[in-house]
Image (tube, rainbow, N blue to C red; front, side):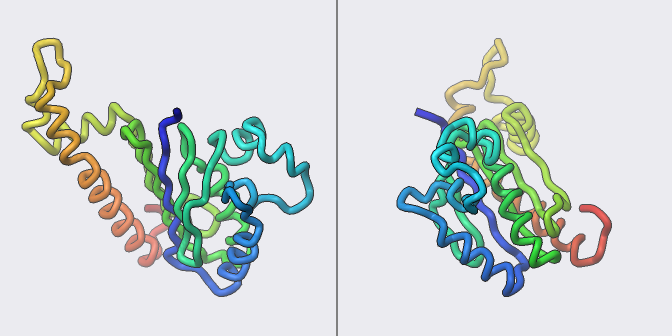
Length: 195
C-alpha cells in the first residue's frame, strides 16, 4: 500500500474566464476522478493515459485522484509523490485566460516525509518551499526544546519524543505554511518582484 500525499490547490485570485475553463475541464472527469482525465483533449491515446508510465511523465505520481473540485480549487490524493507536474499543467491552462491568476498549492506526505507550499502568479512560481524529513525534524527541534531533548544516548528519538512530535507536527507545519502564504501574498500585492 502506498504512502498517500494530500494536495490542495486554491485559487486566491481567478477571473470568470478561468472559472469557465476550469468548469469545462471538470466535465472531463470520469467515474474514478483520475486527474489525468482533466488533461484528455483527444490528442493522445486515452488508454495510454491511464498507465503508470504516462502518469509519471505528465503528472508525477503513478495515480492522482481528484477528491473535490470547484471554482475555488481542488483537493487531490496521490501515491508516494506530489502531483506538481499535473498541477502546473492545470495552472498553465487557466493562466492562458487569466494571466493574473494567483494559486496556492500545498502538499503533504502522510508521515510527513515532505511538505511543500507554493504560491503561483500566472503560470510561474512566485515563491515557495519544500521541507523534507530532515528539515522537518530540525525545525521541530528548534521549535520544541522538549522534543530536542527527547533522544537517547545514540541520538534516536525516544517514545516520549515521538509523542511530542505527533502531538505537534501538523499544527506546526500548517501554521508555518499559513504564515508563509500570508507574507507571500502581501509581498505579491505590494508589487515585490519576488517573495
